[in-house]
Length: 199
Image 1 (cartoon, rainbow, N blue to C red):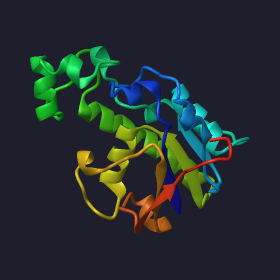
Image 2: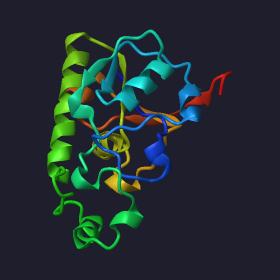
Image 3: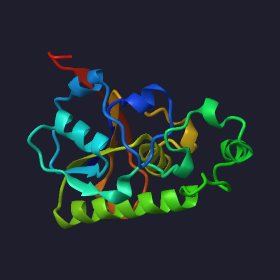
Image 4: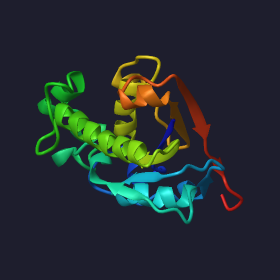
């Protein structure tokens, strides 16, 4: 059983290192030309446009099941702000030091975020088990992928230690029974994305 996780392509806001959660930003021109030869039985996506566009580029002519629960963390009043904009804000300093017990103003707590991601994962798992699928792809966000890797990768690493790039995905390979029990996967492998002929 393979669950493939792909981060959306690099956006203009990512390029300037701004916090980008529930707000959206157009993909950079170079991100429009990434491709993969991989194909899966079913496709899921965050309902944010940068993920939908990325999914259409990577897997053209495929239908995507859009899930709001696969959105990035809601950064509230920090959406669109950079470290330079926020570095003197005491609440931001507290959040950087301890993101478990502090939250962005009018944003989402880490506990709420991870609980929401679990609901999204359960929606995917239910479809996989009901339809007896052996593979699916998920187009989502960096924070979502870090959360899922922390929970399901064979190697246990904290959230921030996972490097989740825009130009590669991850395939989590599960034994089917282990997947049903929400055990960790047995194999984690990277899926490089390549620039197509137009890139």
